[in-house]
Every structure is written in structure tokens, then in C-alpha cells.
Image 1 (tube, one colour):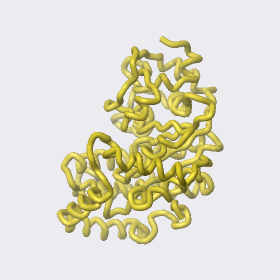
Image 2 (cartoon, helix red, strand yellow):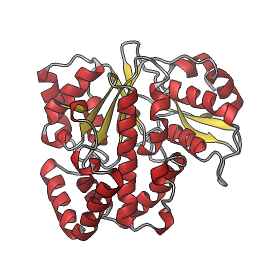
Image 3 (cartoon, rainbow, N blue to C red):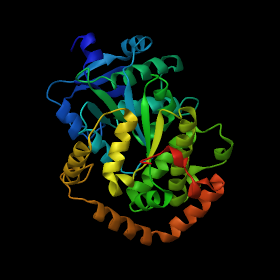
Length: 350
């Protein structure tokens, strides 16, 4: 087991999993290459060489009460919105260390959302925040002092967005989304994704137990299109609230622009993050990533044209469900779902 000082300073030790039954936090070895190879830092992670080790949760909680954060960036997203493609661009930017969908952060968010329910985890509320602080602070570690971490949490961490932004006064974030119609065409295309929407909407509704407009919504009786639509609405509503809380530190990105205007989009995000990058570097990064296959599976060939053809195909196949969803979304949102899901002035690139 490495020394505690090394764990706190070195991202070569990644906090992979919370084990509440054994009350330990599991770490695995990582390096720059394996972080880049891992589209998801969950069970699909590509680990570095070496042995894992475990840290008692009591130790993590004790340190978390006083731990300090480094400045970092966040790429929050609404799922199925090209956020992984954007992260592939960002990981090639000098001085950015990109971490995609760390599972231990999602586990911390899950512990939080299940408090006060029959599924509450055996972990005290008093200890939750120090554990959250310990894990999230470790995600801001970098391999050199000139680097800054760019963390892309899973969309299931939407209940942690405000918590994360509050941990350092200089954290910056982008909120990645696509329009509802494109989101629905992506989700309704397979049974697996429909089931994902049913699971996610239950989680997001738990986060909104006190909201009047979600109080009488019962996910178990929802059609698939309604569950998927509500996932999108809840994410967008969370984005709107985060923008209101941090108007100078948060910007939005329509993920479709990562495909249609990748150079302008990458340049705008880097400008927001305060990262200097030339147009030549932007062009080189976009050209390299565009030739590297699918963002989540680089060995698979996929391009913007293929993406558009796939979208058009599923939009046609699921047209009746999508039409019902669009009408219902406007009713529930009082019109903002179709007109302005986020303020226009917050969207990058301008």
C-alpha cells in the first residue's frame, strides 16, 4: 500500500469503488495512458499495472473533513449528447487531465439520493459530506503542477453538480446537452437504453422529492417515451438552476456542435476554461480524433455522417412516440422545452 501522502497527491492511485459492507474505499493503479483508454471509469475501466489496495472509510472520512481542493473543470451532461466525443478532444489539449465518469463519485451521489428511503445505504449522513469531499478532491489531482483535471461525471451525478461547484471558487464547468428530439431518438432505439431511462428517471425523481411539479409522477406506470422525456426535462431543469447559481462559471454546449462545428466548439470550451490553444492545435486535435473511430469504442469506425443517418433512421421509426413526447414536454415545462431549454446567451460557441 502506498503512503497516505502519495495517495493524496498522485492520480496514479484512482478511487475506484466504495465498499460499504466492508467499509473500505478501493483504489486501483492508473497512468496517463489508461485514463485516456478508459471511456468509463467504472467496471469498464482499463487499469494500470500493479496491485489494488483498500483504504478504510473511516480514514477517508477523517481526511475529508479538512482536505483541500485543487482547481478543476467539469463536463456535466444529459447523456447521449456527444459528451464523450468532447472529452476526447479535451484530453488532447495540453495541461488537461480528463477523467470520464468516475464510478466512486456516482456511488457517493447514490448514497445521498437514497437517504430517507427504504433503500437507504448503511452510511451516516454526518459522514457523507467528508467522504464526498475526499473522493471528489482526489479527482482534482494531476500528474504535474501545470495540469488541471477535467472531470466528466456520469449524468447520474446531476444531484452533485452544485456540491461539486461549491468545493472551489475557481471551478469552471460546461453543461453538454442535445435537443429533446435527438435525445429521444437515441434512447428509444434499443430496449437496453429504454431500461436505462426507466432506472435513471427513478433516481432523478428521488432527487426532486420536494418539487411540486414532480410530486405525483410515478415512474413505474410511465411509457418509455415519457420516462425518457422526464429524464431530459429533469437534467435540463438542473442545468438551468446551476446556470442561475453560477452565471459566470458555467456555460452550455449543444453536443451536436461537437459534430457540426467541432473546431469552434473546442476553441470556445478552452477559452471558457482559460486554456490557451491555437487554431492550428484545435485543427490538429479535431482531425486526429475524427480519424480515431467511435468516441466510446475507438476501434469502431463511426463518423458524423453515419451519426446523422442513424439519427434520421430512428427518428422515423419512433416518430409517434417522439411526437407524443414533444407535446407532453411542452405541457410539463410550460413551453421552455421547445423554445429555450437553456438561456441562449449561455451557449458555446456563440
